[in-house]
Image (tube, rainbow, N blue to C red; front, top):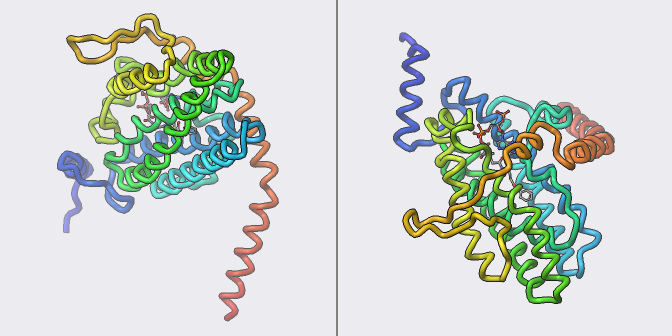
Length: 316
Ligand code: FAQ
């Protein structure tokens, strides 16, 4: 039997995607599709892991036992999300070790948002409400992406992110019902996290080199700007509901488009942060490297145990 040429395979692959069918790990796929997914899923998994650090910073200082238990559970959830996505990425032929070394060496990117510091308890509210809120909008779309393992991981992750979003919003709503100082603290956290959250959706469509290809392959179902607009439209009424002001003087409901218009993002800041020059980039990588080094004995012990089990099974 004559094998299909690469071009024919690519044509069938695209037709499958156009019919809305999933691509599974053993299916044929263009090398570029595999590479793009490894890049994007790898960055996503790293974001979940590095994303534990800003909130982890407040676990010991949570204002009550209940808040502490909730925050602890949330940070653990993020670790779980990282693990699902790393496992999903491994189905594309890259090992967890390789991905991890790309993160530790600074070669792989992770979300810009986690390079900002968490200065007050209200930041836990702002992260849950804005950062998880932005993540849900992006990830709900990814739950319908063409790569099966990624899409399935997103379904579970979105359910947990919804809980994260609500707990963040509830922290801010509680502070807004508190003293003048507590209201100021909530507003200050939103002032600092609003624009970085808007940047999570990536560069504007005209400056997004990967979008065209990823949308053709239905990895991305919506463009960066479309998702960003969805985030603004959903978030502004929630802010009004609890008396928080969005720090954007250009923000205005547009009766014609039925969307909110908003101001220009500081793209210079965005590109600085993603090229390693954000406030906490160094600190975050250092923390991950230290954790990796301190965990060496765990990896050694696990390996020794696995070897012992294998030799016992072999002898039996
Ligand atoms: N940060 O051509 P595009 C979370 C890079 S999960 C850093 O538009 P693409 C949960 C981009 O990689 C948050 N880098 O790229 C949580 C590319 O660089 P490269 C993470 C960014 O891939 C909550 C270059 O710019 N979510 O928060 C960013 O088509 C609370 C050109 O950009 C995901 O990763 C950025 N914000 O679209 C955890 C979702 N934006 O690799 C803890 C999956 C762009 O070519 C606590 N990823 N870049 O050198 C995606 O949806 C996409 O990859 C985008 C970027 C939309 C992020």
